[in-house]
Image (cartoon, rainbow, N blue to C red; front, side, top):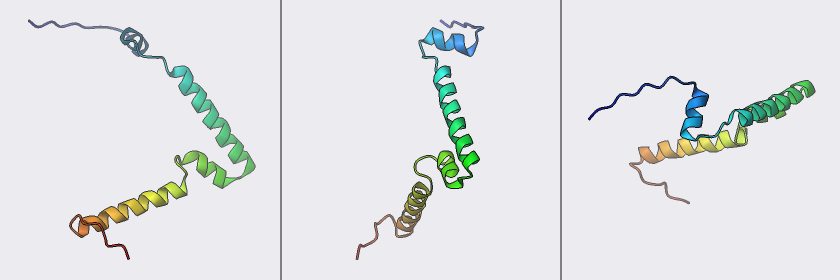
Length: 87
């Protein structure tokens, strides 16, 4: 037995019907907070603070760790999947 059902509703109505929470107020609050932090950093002319706001997870340090991870993974693949010997 097949049954075809077509529902005509907005995304908000669909979320409410499935019992999902309305995250719009939380999203608005987070965006307002981020906007305020970026505005303060731009007004102060502090580019380092501005980049910290734009880059999650620690900025340059996290990028360096991720880059090291990629290089180590590529090196391990080149050695046939074996970890390099530690001195």
